[in-house]
Length: 73
Image (tube, rainbow, N blue to C red; front, side):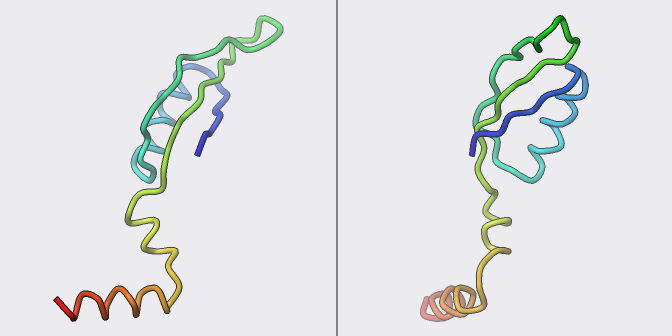
């Protein structure tokens, strides 16, 4: 996923730290200045869902298949 964040630099630092706890953040771009002499900046994250997040979005059939595969081992 490519996610754009816009805010004050200190807000973005905190947001990246928080998002890193629930997403696998692979890359953070440099901050880009906002338009019209704004104090706001934008940056982009390249991120993926964590394995835990992917597992929690499984359907019941996905979980059954994974459990059956584990039982075979």
